[in-house]
Image (cartoon, helix red, strand yellow):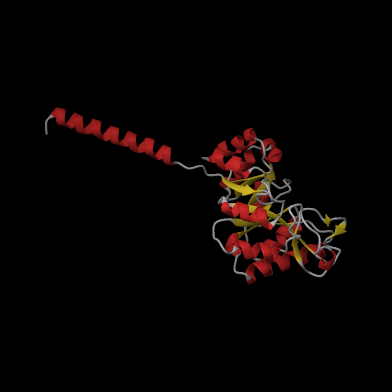
Length: 261
């Protein structure tokens, strides 16, 4: 092989490596996944925490559909964000006191079982179950036990991530099963504290993570997931996409999905 042939082969090798590098860059996909806050409700005919909002999140292939859960005095798990519905306190009332109420789109207030029945017909979109803080530890513990039992009875643990503002609820979920994917919402624990307590990740308000920019990297170093809520502006979405958070929770999931493209 003469010197010209050797130089030509070397040149071909560098061109090939360059093409591979460009192809890899082009094929790199964003790390961040979309969670629809209270489901994909921001569309005609839907409502927050409705079956319709869950179905919309599934239809669009979002990673998760977030929902809020309370337990009634007689042990029924219902999906609602606020502690009251039409003036009735959910955790202090029997289910019969709210069963005839309707959401803004005409649906009855959903039970968690109805959500699970829809979710388990598919395998892509997860239920991001926020167990709401209750007025007593007893009621929080009742809610945790009932939710975990329902998830296990329906064999959908692989489709459920848990979140809560209550450390007690999170601790009970971890105690029930250390493999539960539990993220804390309140924003007052460091990544180191979360790791020591057995959490799966953090799920903090965007201002908390903007004010503690090192927490995202520290969480990754510790093997914790990072989620941020509730991110509704385009600039904030891009800010956290650029920092490769694992999940962004938003009321505008379609806009976020387009940004991620």
